[in-house]
Length: 297
Image (cartoon, rainbow, N blue to C red; front, top):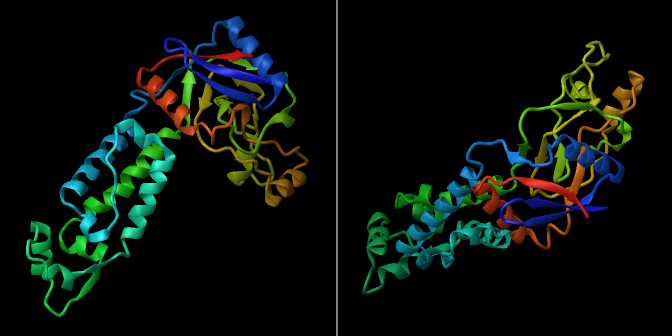
């Protein structure tokens, strides 16, 4: 079964495949009945991290270009429109260039022989003695006092990636709970792109294992006995996971059925093929803090 996340004002849609048809139908019916099916990001200024990364990367690339550091490393970083840096192919390419440039050999002897030296080349010739013939690029930018600037390319790339893949909580007002009628065997060990938030009281079974309740002595287990009208959504890669040997042994010792940690709703269809498109949709609608509705196809 498929469903869409439909953003109210823009009409943009993100297509998802259900992780459990029965539960998704039950959950969306409950949301519609209660008037809860309109989700807004709870985070204040939800694109702040993304904006910081986009503008920070643009700024450092402009400076890199202005200083003409390409002449030393042979690696150019094209300056693009801000939202083009949401393209993971661009980020991967820039990260590879940034990485490879570190070990690029700068021929200082050749720079000394140039007739028309730029300011930066004159500075290099000044800071290195005549017996130094070559140096690695990263060593040169360090001597020039530009290492922090160059390393900032990497910092801003990862800041963009962190911001655009962030798992954000979405709500429609006050938190309400409903007893969960669905069997717990649908719980997953890995988070899907869209899942129900686990805000209910108590510790989940897996959480009790992680925090050393070795003999199940604390009477506070609550693994989605209730469901809430809050969801968590993010554009990250989903990967199936299995329970660890240690968790299974702990569950068996305590005569408990091992339960997953996540109540998943669905994963974005072909996220890898349409990653830039969905990133742009999410970024645009988050920036306007638009509501989305879950609509079953």
